Amino acid sequence: MQRVAEIVYCTATTVSPGGTPRSRILHPVWHLVDDRPVGWVVAFKTPVKVRHLTSNPRMACMYWTPAQHTVAIDAVATWEDDEETRREVWELLSSTPEPMGYDPKILGMEDWNHPFFTPLRLNPTRIQMLRGEQMRAGDYTYRVWQRDGE
Image (tube, rainbow, N blue to C red; front, side, top):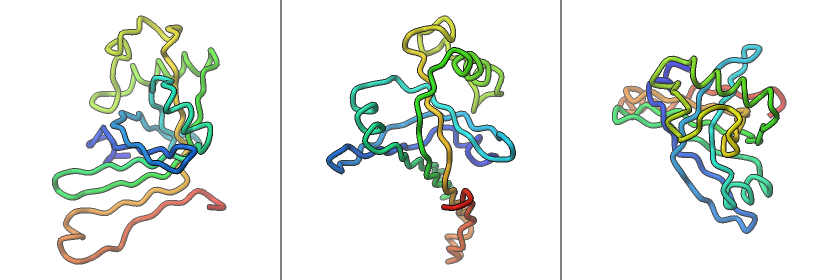
């Protein structure tokens, strides 16, 4: 949590129905639910994202710093646009301290009820971390967290 909060933005990759990957920069807000990480992204429901996630809901998120610290997250992404979740995610984004949290109004939306406010939930299945000093020392012993059954 500390590392992704410091880095803030990740490169997120989805795969088309034909197998073509597409990457984009996203700003997930992560928190713990029952001691498990959950990420939330306000991602516009573009035709490309909808087609990719409908075909294959898995998303890869990569965080990197110039010091070579990395966090790689494999997750299952689902659109969650019921009223209660939209309100909760709006509050989570607003109440999480910067730089991870932010005021969603910067996206041009007045409140959680805006038609383009579409929360995307990221449920990690695997998280892999490596510190830059390890890599420079030739130690590629990753710290790995995996969801039960993965």
